[in-house]
Each structure stands twice: as structure tokens, then as C-alpha cells.
Image: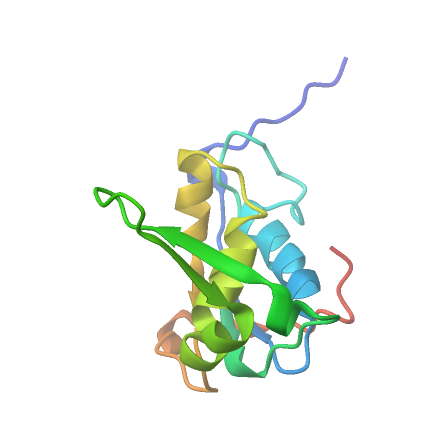
Length: 149
């Protein structure tokens, strides 16, 4: 009888990937990034262990959305400690101000809602332009059209 290997911290090898977000649809990009952060593309994937890789997303301001989301989608934020302080912001204005936050919110919604998911989200780095400070990690360029995740 064969036994399933459980991933341990010492056998996990993490890679760094660069994903260019220019022209990509927000939800499709976020689902693929979430799978890489969780480690579902690896044969040693274990649901209760963080086996995922680091992901750098560049050109966040060039992301696309479909339908009427630009004017209809609203992000809500509640200020704790203050009654009635429910803030709302449309996707179009958030894309103009902080396009990095839009991608982080989309990926965060696709990760587990526990301490493991928060740990996975820390491995996501999103930048507005082409430049990023992670050249020392030697990231690989990942083309999402070619890769089946």
C-alpha cells in the first residue's frame, strides 16, 4: 500500500515568478495568482501547509475588467470604533488611485480565510510599473496564457 507524502517546511522549495498584468482580465489573473500562492500547481500540495511560491505582479494599472464593473462595483470599508463610518469607493476611482490594491483585494478573496491565507497573501508583491525591487531573488517570467494551472 502506497502512502501519501505530507509536505514539511524543510522540503518546500519556493520560487519567485513575475506576471505582467497588462491586458489581463482582473478575475482570471487573480484566480491564477491565488493558485500559485497556495501551491496548487505543485505535486507536493498539502491544504494545511503553505507550499506556494512568491508572485510579483507588474503593470497593475493596465489591468482590464469586463462588463459594467468599472462604474457598478463598489469596495466597502468600515472604520472600526466609529458608528456609521461605512466608506465606499467605486472600482474606477480605486484603479486611478491605487491599482495595486484592486489586485490584492481580488486575490485575497480567493485565498483561505484563516491565518494560512494571510500568510500566503504576504508572498504577493504588486507594483504599478515595470520596476520592482526583487531582482536579487532572480524571478522567472510566467506567461499565464501558456501555463495551465
